[in-house]
Image: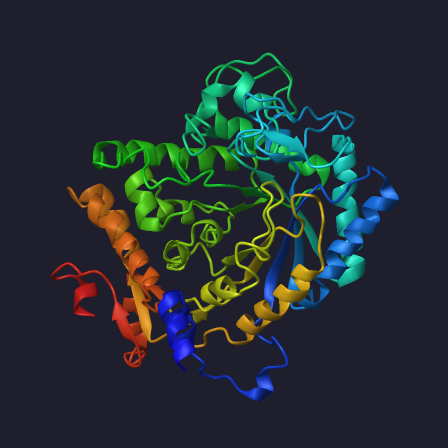
Length: 529
């Protein structure tokens, strides 16, 4: 017993495990995920496992991808593969020519530095230079990529018997592949400083004139073209021509200028510049509208930032409520994978729960960090040390909707199924899968002992209408983050609006829970409830 207590004191986030409701569990239910199947499970992968540009070899690799995860994939309606082909510049550069060579992520480290690939002083880290991941990596064209996509769909269907979808990825930063478009031809689109001064593409940037022909702009890019217009039109051609089904916005793209920092366009670290808020929010929302005008139907999936709804709103003008209500056919951002890197599980949980308090519909996803195909680490094996706490922690989380229904993740993603050297060690799916299934079998069926009543609507209203409340909006989430890091076992969230709706229908719904929230404003319906 003392060993257990010491473990709790050393790792206070393990208190989450004590807060998982077990209402409705019985031995007869433990042999099936009936009623708890995932809508979709996504295997994220780079092109590195395809070490030879040979069609028979590509088919063998594709078959192995699905075979490794088969015992988990039987518990989903649809299987997806999300391809980390490059950094997304393959979309920006696309000219509609199948035979054109493809710049792809065949590197370890950052290839967009001043040092040529494979060069530089020995003391430099791979964040400061890059190497090829293998000698003489294969050369691919856009036509080869189309064949890989087609093969994944065919072989995946054979192995799983499920519908297979394939998604493209766009990353705003300098990681993964060389980008002449971002860093040589059009540096005017750069804004964020997450990996150095002006290193990330700003979603609301504007392009300079460019005479080069592109698939969506055969006569070149006119001056002052919004990036959302250019990227949307290029995405439409790229996704349609190559056979993709959806697109993923990576590393905060579409959600402000700074996806990783605690500061942003409206928070300097010393003061909140509220006068900038409305204008920057309008620019972010305009990006979504412009993208959707050019690329109207492909589903958008999102990574989001490393922070939370309130923090993103106060520091970087991200109005998640407006984005959710925009009708953009998008999935909300999942939990941040950064907890594996910085150990900040409170921030992971606060970001995750605040985003699911309200949703465009009832779909949301959990994302687990198994391998990193670029930075020479495999979190399951090294960062987590094969310990499943960051499976059970976020999978113990649930949301409550306006009808009092418990919501658990409908989608599951694995970042990634291959490592930085293009290997797919079977040890990882063999060890991870039982923990995922156990967490799903034991998923919440009732409110937890502590329920976070999240002021989703209030934060979004106060940010624009109330004077000097941005610090409160920012700090409300930050406070809960630190509480969780200190062992506060919070695992259920409901928005203030849904909370009032549920109590109107089920007055005793929360009788076994303690409610956690900020002080409601006097005289409001929320305060009365």
